[in-house]
Every structure is written in structure tokens, then in C-alpha cells.
Length: 66
Image 1 (cartoon, helix red, strand yellow):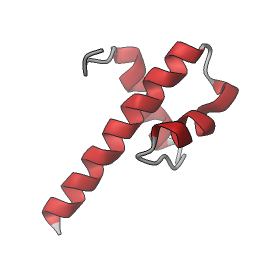
Image 2: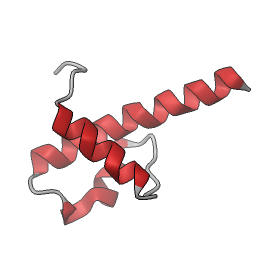
Image 3: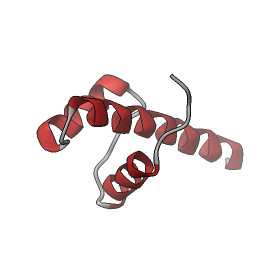
Image 4: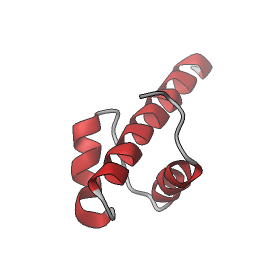
């Protein structure tokens, strides 16, 4: 699989982040947080994976600015 995610996955991940849900940089923890709220297992896994990359990217930016 590549790093390219669909607009739906990105939009969903960013919307969940705006709602104040705390995600981690661990895929399995993000899957548990999303739980049964996603319509399918495939979409849940894609959103969880996107959120892992998103969180790691935020951490790197914070380290660079510090």
C-alpha cells in the first residue's frame, strides 16, 4: 500500500481530530478508539493509519519548533 489516502479518509480523520478526540501514534490504540463507529473495518483501518501518520507529523513539527 502507498501513502496516498482518499479525501474521505483525510476529511474523516481531521474532523475527528477537531472534535477533541485524543489519538496516539500507535495504530492498534487508534483502532480501539475508533471501535465500532466506522462503517467498515477497511475504512476504520485506513483512518487509524492516517491518524498515526498525522500524529507523528505533528510531533516532528513540535520538535523542530522547540
